[in-house]
View 1 (spheres, rainbow, N blue to C red):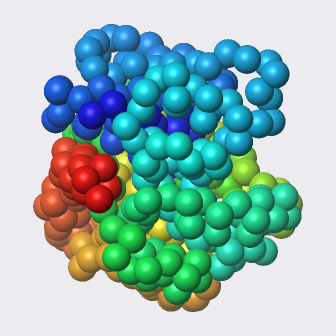
View 2: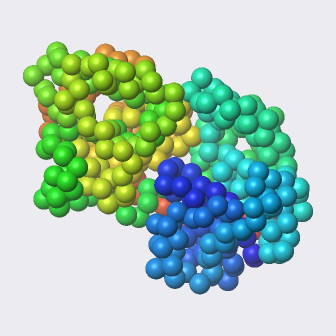
Length: 376
């Protein structure tokens, strides 16, 4: 088979969808050396991505930048369909909610979540408008749809009126680089980032859906109402609609206990995952929830939201609470911080649970779907 994959998510610093695209493509190419895979984008690739692919030297995986200024703004309707025809793809996989609008090849579409439709207040208005217009069209055009969880699969079938047989749930996985480090191994990284020995960790793009404001309010209660005084480390790029969150941080009496690191690379994240007292993730809505599973893979005790997708991806290995319940979150943080034996047990359970997920398995199931689509 000759497969094209959407490279748009790899043109910027990698977040969830970029990591999904890259890890899936790598695993597909390694597991199916008889097939050819091209990651295609009209934008230059992130140097870290292109450099990494070159160093790995996977012969059947290529990054292709399609250069044509005349196609600006018309990639999905003109540029990609034209290139796909020249490249003679058997199938194109839209890994980021989009597929070519002119359908001349079989297509598979990944819908990571329906947050723009189900939680529109947490997104920019332009993103919501685009999703309302384009997502139903993409779902209709695609020959098959992948979701990261059964929870999102059900939402896609119900909200987008898609027949259940067209949608397959395929779990994602922590990246191979995430595994436990000893405390001694993390010291240099923590010193460089100014992270203290006792700290809580939040990882994710700063946006309303991640519910950082609830984390901050719970943290304020932990600091002001108890003798426990950990540092709160927030690792993630600045997103959108975060004025209220920024104002809270700037006005809070505990500002000196909060550290904003910005976007971090995998090795820095691994050090923080491995050494935090607890990983806190009270997201309002998720399609899968990679950060808490990555934290588990490194042995971090995880406190997360009691929502459908996280119940599915984290299972019994995390403490799950209602996402807007500040009091329960603060109480749970205090209990975990004070109980070393419980933290150790949660860390061991998390490592075991995270080990059930792999990108090789995801690649196998995705390739099976490609074969099914081409045979139909």
